[in-house]
Every structure is written in structure tokens, then in C-alpha cells.
Image (cartoon, rainbow, N blue to C red; front, side, top):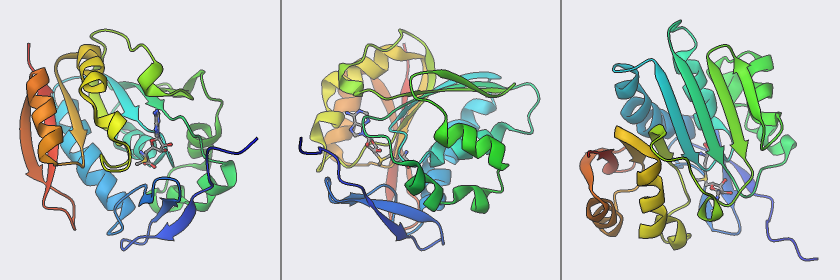
Length: 228
Ligand SMILES: C[S@@+](CC[C@H](N)C(=O)[O-])C[C@H]1O[C@@H](n2cnc3c(N)ncnc32)[C@H](O)[C@@H]1O
């Protein structure tokens, strides 16, 4: 049977961290200006940190898991805060082979203990994993378009799909409506994308939008807040 997934190529980005190039979608998994730099800017600084200031129990939804970089960065940013608990749910329809995950060697850059990074990157899919006492992770090997999400559950959404040009179905009003329903009041969705059409969809659903400065190489990114 013909495979639907071509193994991506490893590519070095300008901050010295690796990303992958998807031959199927003809895009990289992260910015070529810096994978770690982009993930820190868009998902940690603009998503996780503002919510951490308000609450201790945080549930996160991610599309998609990819190299696991956003999970590693999230763990690193809460590890020293005793009172915090994170319940992280990440979806990916095409999990990467272990050798490619290891080749990205983010744990070297991020100085994360190998036991933790191994647990995050290579633990079973579709199973709740206790990464440590403050962090639970469920990696869903599912197509997010076909899944039912819990109502009123997620405090943060890391919307990290491939670009609207390469996967328009993931930037559709129906998926954003489903995600909106799954978010708590005042929850935020962050994405590197600042495309007018995407912002119009988010606004139409009822999100309040902020256009924030983007990471190096990108003028803007988007933060959308659910307000009932
Ligand atoms: C931009 S990459 C994610 C990068 C990732 N957050 C990281 O830090 O490496 C987009 C991911 O979405 C996944 N994906 C594509 N279509 C999907 C779908 N319908 N449901 C779930 N995941 C999907 C891809 O396999 C890919 O790993």
C-alpha cells in the first residue's frame, strides 16, 4: 500500500535549533529564523505565561505535536512552580519516527533531563502519561477534524497547524467553532498566523483578537480570547 506520509527532512534554523521540512506539505514545521525562538515567542510568551499569572491549574490543547517542542518548552516553564498543574492534550495524525525526534535534540538546547524528554517524546500515544507530579500529557494519534473535544475545558490552545495555504481544512470555521466550544471563558488561542481571512473567521465566531508582534522574520502573530 502506498504510504500517505513522507519522512520529513531535518533542517537547521538560524537560532541553531533544528526543524523539519515536510515534503508532503512543502513547508517547515517551524520558522527558518529559529524553531525554539518562534515557539517561545508565540506559544510560551504570548500564550502560556499570561495564563500562568492568573491560574494554577491549566489545560492545554495543541494542534499538532510534531517534534514535541511546544510540550518540552511548556514543561520547562512550569517545572519550578510548585503550585502549578498542567494537563496537556496534543493531537497529531502523523507521529514522527523516534530517530527523527531524537535527531532534533531539543533537550540539549533546553537542558531538560533525558528521563523527562524521553517520556514526552517517546511515550505511548492515546494514553495519559504522568510526566511528573505537575504535568500530565495525552498525545492523541487522531485527526483533529474527526474528534469530539470536551466542552468548556481548555484554558490555552496552541494552534500550530501547517499554513492555511498548505492545509486550508485546518483553518476552517467548523474546526475553529469546535475548538471555541472546547475552551473555558477567557481562554486564549495563540497562533503564528496573522492572515486576514483567518482573523475574520476567528472574529466571526466571537473571539476577541489581538495582533501581537511576531517572532523574528514575521511582522505579526494572533492571540484570540474567548469572551462569553
Ligand atoms: C507545524 S507542525 C507542528 C509543529 C509542532 N508543534 C512542533 O513543535 O514540532 C503541524 C503538525 O500538524 C500535524 N497535522 C496535520 N494534519 C493534522 C490533523 N488533521 N490532525 C492532527 N494533526 C495534524 C502534522 O502531522 C504536523 O506534525
